[in-house]
Image (cartoon, rainbow, N blue to C red):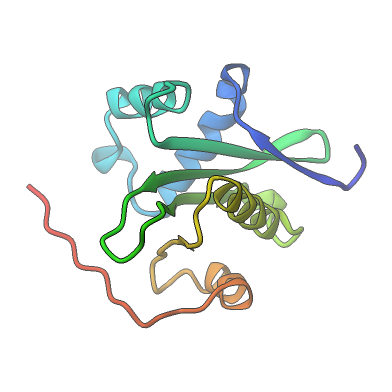
Length: 153
C-alpha cells in the first residue's frame, strides 16, 4: 500500500477503526465529556450507514495501512434543483495523518460518489476557527458567503 491513500465505503468490520475518528471529530467540535454525544446516537448513526433505505453513506480513507479519515454524507432533495444534492456532513482526518492529502482524497471521493448518484452539488460547512480545513476547502470549492443559523431544543 505504501503512501497511497485509498478511499472506500465503510464496512461493518471498520467499527474499531472508525470509532476513534468519530470521537476525535466530535471532540474537535466540542462534543466530549459532559457534552459528548449519547452512545445511542453513535450506535444509531453507525447502523444507518448500513441500512439500505437511509440516505446516509460513509467513506473511510486508508493510509499507511490504517484507517486515517472519515467522511459521512447525506443525499437529500432540494427546492432549487430537480436532482438530489449531497451534504458532506462530517469530514475528519486523524491528527497524526493531517497534511498528507487524506482530506482532499475524501472530498474528491465524495464528489465522485455524488456525481455518480446524479447530484450536481456537494456542499459542507465548517467552523470559522477551522483554519487548516478552510485552507483546503478554499482550494476545492467556492465559499458562497452563507452563514449558518441553528435553533435547537
